[in-house]
Image (cartoon, rainbow, N blue to C red; front, side):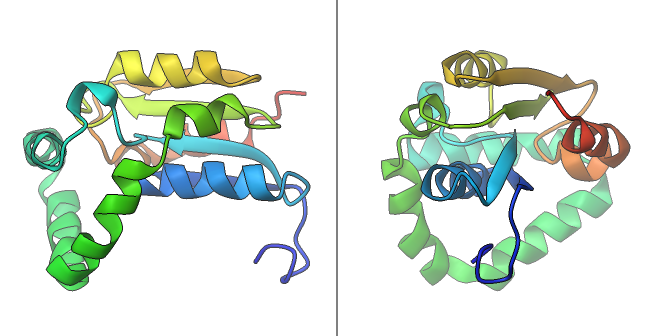
Length: 162
């Protein structure tokens, strides 16, 4: 899609399930995707079932502002159970660690300090697996760190590691 739009050397940001999408996009077209920023990547092996992921996401609500929780709830309701039943098997089947280990360019793997979905250990493991990976943590943030601490995450997006 990036090449179709005439884009090359992009920096892609993926949050939660989107982290898997961004990793796969970089693997498939490394000329189009120069660098990746993965925020709160799923599926942390310490909670690799639908029930565990749902519980962790529910627990995250206490670390997010009410406005963020309202947006998240609206998004989930709008997507509906049919969408989730179609997408979740792919999310759990995708080997995020194996994908990140093969990334051909620099990647920042980030999480909120209070994110119950993406543990500190998981984020560090992914950053260590990446050939050129960096782990970052947003202080006092939950799973939706890029919304609650946008200037800090934006700085990481703009950083050029070269």
